[in-house]
Structures are given as C-alpha cells and as structure tokens.
Image (cartoon, rainbow, N blue to C red; front, side, top):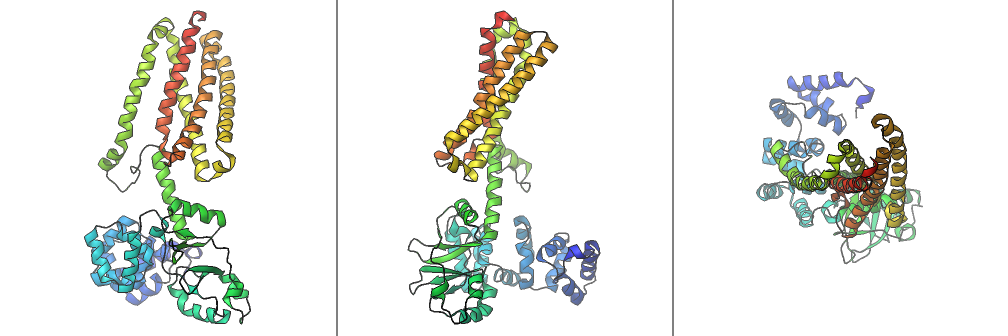
Length: 453
C-alpha cells in the first residue's frame, strides 16, 4: 500500500486522475487500489459525476466499500443515488454491519428496506437486529463480527482457526470464550494466546474478571468505561448474560466526537444549528428558541436598570461601568461553567465532589475580584478623578465575580443531578443570569453610597 507522505502526493494523485480520465482501467486500478482508503476518499471527493461513473465501472462494489465508509453522510447518500441496486448490495455486503446500520438509520424506511432486501440474507438479519436497538446505546453502536471460542479448545487449534475467521471479524485482539449456553465465561487476548504453549487449553489461560456492558447502556457511559480500562473492545451482553456483540475503540472515538459536538451545541445554545450541511433557514430555526428567550431576559436586564434610573440621573458616570460589570460577570460565569461541565464529562467531579468544585470556583472568583478590584482602584481615580467611584465599582465587581463563579459551578451540577445533560446550562443563559445579578449588586452598592460621589 502506498504511503503518500513518502512520495509526491500531488504527482501521484495527478497520475491516478489521468488514468481515470484516459479510462486506462489496469493502470487506474493498480494506482488507486494501492492507496490507503483515506487517500482514496481524498481523490474520490474531487471527482465530478462523469468521473465518478467511470470509477464505478473500473472497481467493484467490494473494492469501493472502503471508500464509501470514509465519506460523509450526505456524500454517501449522493453516491447511493448514483449506483445500481446490485452495486449497492455489494457495498453493504462488504462493510461492517454496524456501519450499515448507522447509515440505514439515516434513510427513510422505504429506502432502507430496499437496501436490506438486496443484501445477503444473514447480514440483513444482523442489520435489522442492530436497527432494533435505541440509538445512542451500546446495542445501537455494537458490531456483530467477533470471534468466539470454547474453554476446551487448544491454543494451536484456535490459532489455526483464526486464519479463517479473522478476515470477517471486527477485531481479533480479544477472543470471547462462551459456555455451552452461549454465556460469556472468559476473555482471551491475542497476546496471551500467542505466548501460550500450543498444547494448552483456553480454559487455563483465559481471563475470568470480565468487564461487560449491556445493550441498553448509554453510548457515552460505554465510552467512559472503555477509557477507564483502556480497552480496545468491550463485550456487549443481554440481560441474560448472552454475548451479542462488541463495541470497538473506533466506535468509541466516533461517540466521543459526537458527544463533544452535542455538548458544544448545547453550551452555546445552538443545538443542531452548527451543522454546516444544513441551510441557513434550518440553522436559524434551531437557534431561534434561545435567542427569543434571551430577548425576554434582556427585558429583565432593562427593568433592573430602570429601577435605578434615579441613581443614574444623579450620577450619570455610573452608566459607563454597566458594560464592564455585565461583561465581567458573564465571562466569569461561563468560564466556571466550562470547567465544571468538562469535570462532569471526564468524571473528575465525582472524585473531588461538588463541595470541592464550588469551593475552588468561589476561591477563583474571590481572587479574580481582588485582582480586578485593585486594577480599578488604580485606574478609575486617574481617569474619572474619584476614589469613591473606584471603590464602588471595585467592590461591586469583587462581589459579582464571586457570585458568578459559584453560579457557573453549581447550575450544571444541579442539572446533572436531575439526569439531564449539564451542557444545557448554556453559556448564554449563565451570561444573562449573571448580568442581571451583577447589575443588581452594582446599583445597590452605588445607590447606598451615592452621597459620597
């Protein structure tokens, strides 16, 4: 297989494209099929419809399967619409069944059933089973291609059999030992298998301290478990303890990427609106609810300022520090929110506890308030010629930052305790809430000591 980092990538891709355009089938196949699948994808996505049709004619569905796996969902849908039913069947009879299930779950039922009916009967049944599990669960992301052995098997026989079973397996780094009833009784790593004596039986070398997940376990919990144990794969069992599939590390990487994207969507109050593949109208629809809600929060903010209109009329300069108070409060709260949401996601909060997180963020808020307060006590008298004004603004910011950091720390924890995603304590919500608190603190202190100004 060619490694394009060792050759001139541009020249090689040019040769591949030239062979395709010239319809030199033998040369194209030799060049294209010798590439890493990802490099094949990089070339394929540059092709127009005419060149794609030529490519389909030069390589079979089984050979194109690895390219199809590497494409984005929308591109996959486009490709399927360009291919014959027979070619599509060859693709889906080649790629792993869990990948097939993931793709078909995104199609309309009629189109999905059409593809299922064209596939190999046994593989079609497996895919239908995977589609029956709820999305974002272990059952929904597991692979059905794994290697099983028995406790009575000899090491030499297992190694010989792997030559035939390994090509169809998702991974062979772990071999799963089943009892006569199909229940998981042990796990044998490929390493332990290779170094064991050829005459030894599996039952004497397998591991019996088995970590498993159930079909209904949330995919994020599966990812956390695999990260904790540094697994390359974890077995999935039914409630009766029957081995039904495995979740591999590549699936977990996809899950973690998906969960991070979802959390980021929630964090900025744009759930589902960050996908660059959707139209601007769809993006606006998804973002609109929070924006409208924040408008009403804005009315509250305006109402708070209105309540202290008399103070503003007496000392107009107080208005100059409204943006400073609001921005500082919102930023500090959002920073604390980000820290705690990440701590929850990585399970570090469970180890330290809520009290530790609140105490830490409160201490951070006090320190930030002290630093910014000192800066204001120096700068404000120079710019505005009033130490009293500096003291009011500095003390307001000190208290505001302390409260804001606690808010940012506590709110996501309370949401998490309610079994909801802590990321929904979005940045805009925390920012607006802390803006209101900051204004109340600022104008209360200013009104109390206004006769010193």
